[in-house]
Each structure stands twice: as C-alpha cells, then as structure tokens.
Image (tube, rainbow, N blue to C red; front, side, top):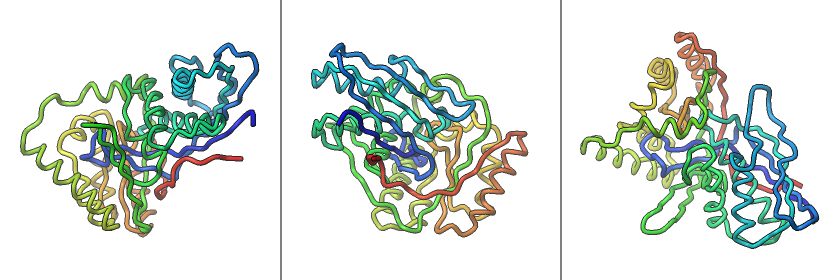
Length: 314
C-alpha cells in the first residue's frame, strides 16, 4: 500500500465550563487527508494539493500546516526517511471554533499510522495529533483532537499523566451551530487565549466545577437536559463573547425559541446550542440568524448530531 486516506470530523471544545478539558465530535464538517509514500529517502514532506471552499485559506508551508507538523513528528520518532506527499481536502472551515486544525491533524495521524502499520494506539495518536494544534494555538492542546479521534464526548486529564475518557452521547442529543460571517484574526485560537483572565473568584471557580460535573453526569446518564443544565460558564465565556458581535442577543433569542442551552464553540466565533431531539430546531436556527442580523452580521446555521470520530476511507 502506497497511500492511505482518512476522514476526521469537526468538533467543539469546552461546552461552557470545561475549558481545555471537554471535547465533542460533531457530524457537521470533515477533513480528508491522503498520505502517499514516495520513493527517494530524503525525509521530505510535500503538500501537493489543498482543496478548499472559496474564501478558506490554510497554510501550505510545512512549518505552519497542522497535517505536516503531525507527520513530521511521527517520522522523526519512528526514524522514517521516505518522501511523503500530503493531499488535503479541507471541509472544516478554519478559525471558527469547530476544530479545523484538529480535524486535519487527526486525519493525518490516523492515515500515516495505517499506511506504515505502526500500530500506534488511539490515545498515543491523540498525543501526536496535538502537535498540529501548535499551528493555530501556539501550544499543544488535546480537547478537539481527542474528540475528533475517538468520537463522542471526551474528557482530557493532563496531570499527573495524560489520559482520555470517552462517553457515548445520548441518542436524542442534537445541536444547532451558528457561524457568524466575521473576520477572524490569524492564529485566532492564540488570540482568543490571550484575552482570558489570569485570575477568577472562588465563587466562579466553584460554579464552573459544579457545572462541569453536571455535564459529565449528564453524559453518564445519557440525559440531555442534565447536560444542558451544566452549560453555563462564568470565566471564559464572559471574556470571549466580546469577540462575537451580538452574542448576548443570539443566546437570548435561541433560548426563547427552545434551545436548552447555548455557549461559544471552542474559541469562537461559532456558537453551539443544545437540543433534545430536533424539535424546535427550525425556530432556533431562525432565532440565531435573527440575533446576529440585529448586529448586522450575516450567519449560517446548521443542525447536526455527534460524530463517531475518525475513519479510513477506501
């Protein structure tokens, strides 16, 4: 086998109070990565093709491309010196808080592992995929890559050692995603981290721990309403919502239209609302668009469910 293609889904991180801990794979957008083994053992990685929607721009140089960073790290660790070609079909829009760099990173790691039959387990592959997050966030972080790799709802533990815990989502869990059409800065995730408070009150910390615990219990019991009760963030959302015009109005309108909860998806500017079944989904989608429109912002809205994670495409 000289080539292998993998498909990895979009994802959302944090779910409100679970900053850098919670991730959830979304069956919304997907990235496809084909890794091809070439001759001549010069340890050279080439990004040959990038197919993307009009207006989407991703780096084509190896030092700033998530997939290339991941492949290079695995090649270095396993002392693989082949020339490698990476073909990217970019389906997850970058810079909107939907795990774009994670999807490319996960698909690249998964395809490379399969192509070379390295037998790296999923948890270690997450660690490799996190290398690709350096391209957008400036640091390794695991919430999006864990959920895109494993599917479902994931929890990341980093101390005392790196661990990942997965829950299967409830069957009746749905989401409405709103994506505002606004200009996002380069390295947006890094910028969104820079505005976070360095300190918080004990009351806010206790509230966030309580709410995060409620979300975990909701996934354990497969109770959508319990999950939604926990989606209330007192620390990160108040800081980041300032980067999203009309956020408070969008949230108010979506809740009034029947959403059980709404928060920022990852670093934003996309928002994610929680539904039990797809009841009220049309009303919620219209409410989100109206909320952004009141701030003179165009938006796109989507209904989706959780994803099962990365897979090989023949």
